[in-house]
Each structure stands twice: as C-alpha cells, then as structure tokens.
Image 1: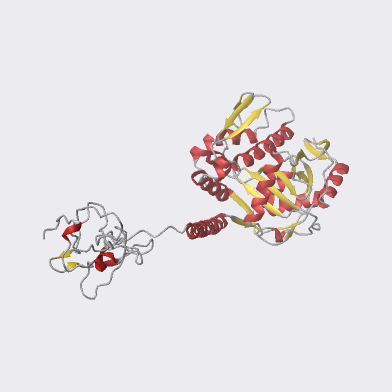
Image 2: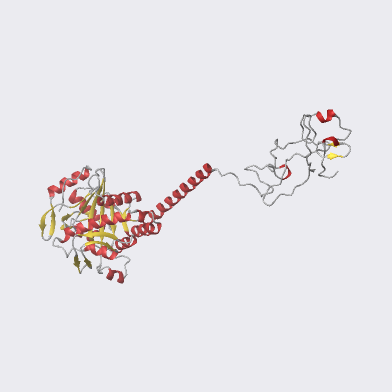
Length: 444
C-alpha cells in the first residue's frame, strides 16, 4: 500500500473485529464506535528519521511517530520492538523545542548547534565589580598623586632654629612671603618680567594667614614697617647674633633669610608662626599661566615703568607677566606700600579661587601642570605637610568667597619713611588671633 492510500469504512480487513474497532473509543486512525461513520481521510505515512531543518531553525524533535498500515496486519503503533511512546512533553522536545541528540537548550548551557548560548547577564555582579574597580583606581591615583606632590615640596626652612618663641595659640598661623628670588630665571625671562638682576633676595610681600573656627583672616605686613630686629640664631653658623636694632621689616629677610624674618615678626607681634611658605618671581608667573590667567576687575587703570604695569580700568584677564607686574607695583600709588599690599591680597585670593574651579580641578591636563608649577616654586618649612598646604589654599579661597577677612596691619603713622604700627590695635588683633576669636580690629 502506498503512503497516501484512501481507506473506507467498509474496507477494513477481515482480521479486524467490531471489538477491535470499538476498543479505545474515538481513537485517531482506528475507527469510531459512534453512530456516524468516520469519513474517509488521507493518512500520510510518517517515518522516524532525521529531518533537515530550514535555514536558521533548530531541527524538529520530539514529534510522536504516526501509526502506519502494514498489509495483512492492520495498523501498528508506530514504534518498533522495545520502543515506548513518548509525547515529547516530559523532555521538553515538543514540535521543534529540542536540539540535536535530545538536547534541551538552557540559558546557561552550550548549544552544540549554535556554539553555545550567552549566559543571562548578572547585573548585580557587574555593578559590584565596576564599583570595586573604580574605587581601586581612585585610591591608586590618589595615593600616587599624594607621593608625587609630596616629593616636589622644598622643605628648606627649619623653624626649630628660631629662638625665644611665643606660646602657640588656637588655630594655625601661616607666614606667606613673596620674594624677589630670580633663581632659575634666564636673562631673557628677567627682562620680560622686569625683575632686574640685583644680587641677594628681598621680600616684596609678607602676609599672615590665620585659619580657625571663625573663618580665615589675611593680614598684610607692609615691607616698610618700622620694627626691631632682635637677637637671633644664625641660620648658617648656629651662633647667637644681634640685636640689629630698628629697621624695615624686609631687612630681616635680607640679613639672614626666613628664620630671622619669622623671629622678627614673632618678637614684634607676640604671635606664634606655625608654618612658612615662600614663592619667587618666576614661580608666581608660571602658576598664573598654568591656570590660563586670572580674571580681575580693576577700580582704576595705572602704569608703572619699574614693574612694567600698564592696566586699564575694568574687567580683564591677567597672564603671568601682567600678574607679577600687578602685585609688585607701588610707584603708581600715593600710599605706595599700603595700596600694593591691598592689590596683593586681592590678586592672591582671586588666584586661589581660579585654581579651585572645576575647570581646573577636574581637568588633569590643567590640574597637574598647575600643581606641578606651584609645588616646584614653593619653599616651605620642614614640618609642612600637604594637608597643611591644602588648608592654607582653601583658607585663601575663603577670603575671596566672603568667609573671612583681609586687612593691613593697623598703622598709626610713620618714622623716617617707615610705617609705624598702632601698638594698641596690634595687641588687640594678636589676642583675638591667639584665642581664635572673630577679628574686630580694622587695618589701614
């Protein structure tokens, strides 16, 4: 019999009895015991064997084998000896749901037909390891930056050589000095920056920055202040020298450098200096250039052939050369030294604010050159840490932001061209700083 033979109800083989036809009820392909005869249908012979899947489709597996008619013996059950019927549901291989050789695909199992399934992504694990990686990277960069920056500090000033020191008060006092050091500058740079070529070093600016619980206070000490230079221990010889008598404040630095300057300020004020920071001409200009200049608003324009200053009134951005001329100019003003100290305070605060902007701090191509230029240019005391330096920097920025106060040392008059401090006001000011109280004294 061919694979597609039509079978009529009255053509059942003789071997089939009514019992055979009625057993199983209304079973597919085996007649029916119902009142109505089963209509003729086409039966396709289905043989078990490999099936060629279409392009991109898995092979069909798990479809039950259909019964076939065997001449003289009727229909078989579609399975050979020892073969049990399997609907395919118990293995999941139903109508194309299985793979080759009875394989049932799973999200995390490889598929031999498709070179393996990709595992389901574990987002919690991915997020955890991403966070761990970022934290590790941040720690490594931070530690590396710390040691790199720490190695650049020039800790050349030994404050332990200062004798007869006042008691330490509340808060921290930094002495910030701008010197006319030309170390490392070429003849062309000296000419460009109008520094001249004088021998030795002098101080062009001196400031005391106090930090504490009541905001920062920045106090400028005019270099022409009339002070007493007391006995001191020589920075090189270690021998006791002096006193050197009455002189300008910047003369102390010229005589024996930073330690004598600290000794003179402490002697004339009674205020303990905790840290010393100094920057020269060349380093100052490099820092300004590294941040792309500093924006300033000038109340008036002025010129000074000695410093090279030539400014107009209004808002403008100063580069390194212009900034150095701005903080050094004094011949353009009637109250030369006092006006210059005010300009210095204004500029240094603006510089600190510019360095702290996100465009500098978050940009490694600007942040590291700026930090490198600053650290290369600074001379500090042996006990100065990066944390102390950072605290000083943020305090300077706070003065600009209105969180602190800036002033000149109170002046009562002059003597021989030198500025005389107001002793009563100075005492009140020092007492307030020692006790870390809000400063009530005003300067000139």
